[in-house]
Image (cartoon, rainbow, N blue to C red; front, side, top):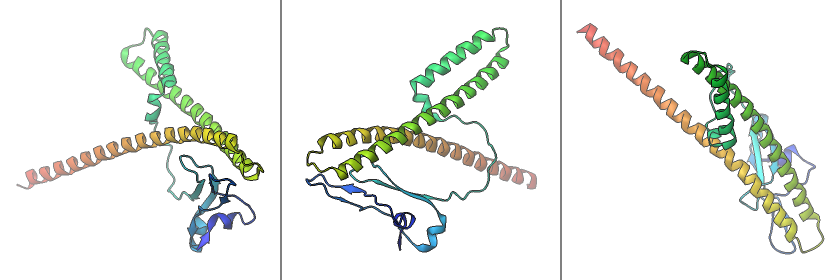
Length: 217
């Protein structure tokens, strides 16, 4: 079995845990062990700051082997419906659209509103993703710097550094909590959609069987 992080970074030194005792003890307790035959499907292996725990996060990414897919169709990310800033933008977009299309018939107006909501949503989610990614990256770098300072400090009074690390990890926790809520909402929506398709398919098959019996009797 291979310690994949050590295999990828043979000369690098990173630690995944430190004690709360004085003097502070550091060590690398957390790692992935994989068979050599799996190395060719490993994309990256990184050690990142953890949250809600005193251990670091060991991240292992595998190659995403999936068949090519087309562009698909627009589907709203349900998690942003709880975002008050997004709600305000959409309300204003609808008001502006109605104001600028007073003479349009209801069907045309509805199509214009849907198109504008779609465009506004795409712009907003793209902006939020970039903003969140920037905050996540900066927070992780800050935590890594603080943990390095904690490791290298010669004083026993490390309270300020530890408090700052805790504060930054709370920010990271908030980011991941929001992302997790989005994943759960999308998973529920996919589950409902899948069940509806399954029920429709089942009903179609039943109708086919009924029609067969009608024609054969």
